[in-house]
Image (cartoon, rainbow, N blue to C red; front, side, top):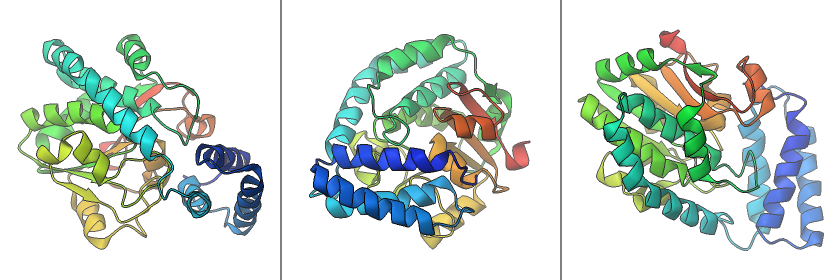
Length: 288
């Protein structure tokens, strides 16, 4: 997805919020914003928003004393989401359609996103909402068929906390298919995106192979991720891509992808021709 004009003020606001979150004083906030705005001026308008976010958050981390300013909230999000799993696991097991329920809960976890919002994120409340809410777009039967017919599945994670609810869906997928399922996470910290440490914290490394993509972009930039991970993605029978960043970076690629996300950004919602605030399970590439 290309960068729209509305993305620029959003990126600056996100940079300011990140600077405050990192504990920078006002002088350093000002210096960081000056540097961020100079970066924006020199960015090609053809790049996707996660490319801009990657560069901006590198600047934030340069100024922050902690190389991962979101580390504490990531840990807390993982802890809170893991506490919900026993009850949610029972609800998936007892559901008339376990796959749809697991998909709904995995998407509910997408609310844990410090790139799209920095206010309160109540995952329990979001789960209650997603139980009854109609999707803006749901290609459930196509997804079911893609899962059961695949020999290899790549699951592209998004955020910490959310990744614990991804575990629910991955647990179910393992009962539906003999496919090799590989979880791909970020190579190094950016925002509250999940890394290999987060995957281990929620026990996903005990279920499936976990690999990091070698990148600090809040999405999946095919031009810069590790070659082995790129080959894994390109050769997969099915790619499950969580979150807005993965949509922004992969929506133009002709891969066998299903996007799972909540549309928190009106620009992305417009790009998908849907309403902001809706839930999406959308196939593209060979699934359309």
